[in-house]
Amino acid sequence: MFTRRTALRSGAALTGTLGAAGLAVPLLGGTEAGAAAPGEAAGQAGAGAAGFDVSALVKFTRPLPALPVLSPRRRTARAETYELRQRETECEIVPGLKTRVRTFDGCFAPPVIKAVRGRRTVIRQVNELTVPTSIHLHGGHVPESSDGGPMDLVQPGASRTYTYPNEQAHANLWFHDHAHHQESETVFRGLTGLYLLTDETEQRLPLPSGAYDVPIAIRDIRLDEAGQIVYAMNDGKDRNLMLANGVAYPYLAVAARKYRFRIVNTSNLRTLDLRLSDGSSYVQIGSDGGLLARPFTTSSLTLSSGERADIVVDFARYAAGTRLVLKNAVASPPGPEDQIGDLLEFRVGDRAEDRSRIPDTLRSLPPLPPPDRTREIELLMGADGTGLIDGKAYQEGRVDAQIPFGSTELWSIRNANDRGSHNFHVHLVQFRVVERNGQPVTAGPESGLKDTVRLAPGETVKVQATFGGYRGDFVYHCHMIDHAAMGMMATMRVG
Image 1: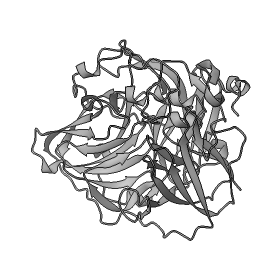
Image 2: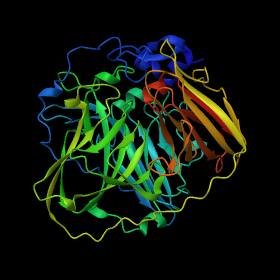
Image 3: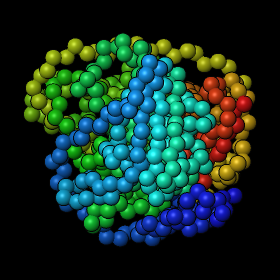
Image 4: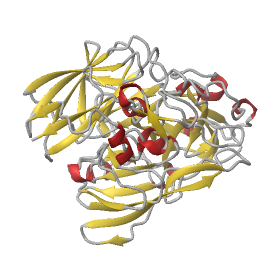
C-alpha cells in the first residue's frame, strides 16, 4: 500500500494529502472526484468556481506555433546526446495573460527530439522543479533502467541520464512525467515532449515532408480568471479550453497541396474525435507504433489520452481563401461545444508544387504467431475514487504479472465501469489489437502497431504482444493519467 512514509519519500506530499486507499490527493483546486463517471466527474472542491471565460475568447487570431526541434549537445557516429532542464516558466496560452507552466527547457509547446533507428539517444534530465519526476518515453522499447518507472524518481535538484537504444521501427512517440501520484499534475501543467523516430522504411516513402510535415500536440486545460492553471484530480468536465501546440484555438496557413499531420493527444483525460468542419475525408497513414500497412480513408478519427495518429490532408481540393476548422466531435469528458468542439483553423492559400503521394502499401506487418498464454485484465474505478486493475490499486514492489522473456501473450482487457471511459497502455512493447467487442480487427486505424488503446464503458479489447528485448519490471495502466495517479496501474515482471 502507498503509505504516508512512501508519499513523503516520493514527494507526493508536497502538493497533497492522503485520501481513499492511501492515495495522495492533490490539494491544488480540489480533491478526488467520485467514480460515477470516471474521467467525466469534476473535482469536489473548485468545481463551478469562477474561471477564465472561454466563451469570450476570440478564436483563430494567432498562428499555430511550430514545435521547437531540439539540437543535441554532442553527436557521435552512434549517438546523439541532449540535456533537458525541467523548469517552470511563463507562457502566453491565451492572448494577454501569462500562465505559469512546467516545461522541458522552457517549452510549453512540446519540444521535439528527432531520432533515427540504430542510433542511440542519450538525454540528461535535470530536475529544477520543486517536485520529483520520472521521465517515460511513451511507446519506447527501452531497458528498465531508462523506462521512467513510477517510483524511479529524480528528486528536485538532481539529474538522471536516460539512454534510448532506438532499435525499434519508426514511430511517433512522446515523453512525459511518470512519477506516481505526481504525474497527473505535472503533465497537466505542461511537462511533455515529442520524440519522432524514423527509419529507412519511412524515409523511402514519398510522403509530404519538410515544411509540409507538421506535428500537432492537442490537449485541454483549465485556467482561472488570472490565466493560471487550475488543477484538481479527475475534474475532466471543467477542463474547457482546447490547445494546439500550446496555444488556444490557433490557425495554420496552408498551401493548396498535401500535408502530413502527426497528431498526439497529450490530454490527461479527454478523448478526441477529429473531423474537418466541411465533413470531408482525409487519409490516416499511421498510429502509435508508426505507419499502418495500408492507408485508411476516413472522416473521423478517435484518439484517447496518449494515442497518436498520422494523417494526410489534401488541401488542393479547396479554393484559395477557404477556411476549415479541425473539430473535436466527442464530448468526453462533456463540455460546451463552442469551447471543446474547436481545435484549430486551416487557412488555404495558393497552390504549391506537390510531388508527394500516398502509396497503396506503406509497410509490411508480419502475421501474429499463436500466443503462448492468454490473460484477462479488468479496469475499474471504484466507488471511493480508487483506480483498480484486477481489483487492486497499484502498490510499489508488488509484481502482478509474471511474463516469461520472449513469450507472446494475448490479453483480454475489459472496462468494468458502466459509465466513463478508460484506456490501456503497456510499457516496453508495441502490441496489435486483435479484437474489439468480439469483432476481429483486420483493417483501419487500430490495425497497426499500438501501445495505447481506448475502452468505452463496458468494452472489451483483445491485444497481443511479444515480450522480448529487455528483462525487468515494467508497468501497465490506464493512460487517462488521472486514473493512473488514482491507482489504476500494475507491474509486470518480464524474465
